[in-house]
Image (tube, rainbow, N blue to C red; front, side):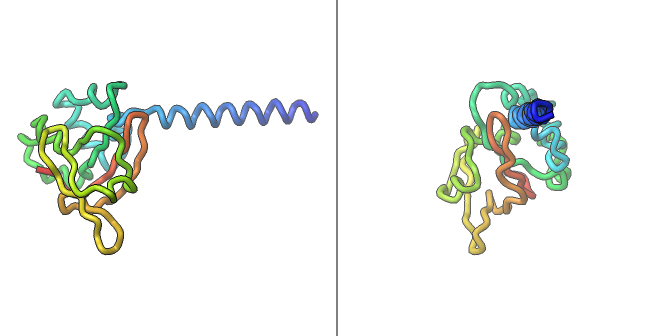
Length: 150
């Protein structure tokens, strides 16, 4: 009986371990697409052909993803503009903790955006507070903002 419990415990641990690995293995793009708050931004990335860049193993990225509510306010022309979409992405995995030590970052589009530490300890990206931060993906991290970076 004890041997049976050990085998059962090993199987449960194995299933949980594999499940956790699969969650962490999702790319930045897959994580954006499956998140109910960022799916519209993910669709725009896909339509602009930027999904492959964020799906592969070609590096790590930090995405300041507009919420679906914020992205819905954007003109349809901008939603297909690669440079506009790249305004929301930087190279490397910058967690909220590491962002607290930065004042500016350069996006993949080439523009420089401002990071401000607020009095209450929260952060804002180009005057848009982080709504949710440190959403981990296999090749980076995502922070949700309630605005778009132009």
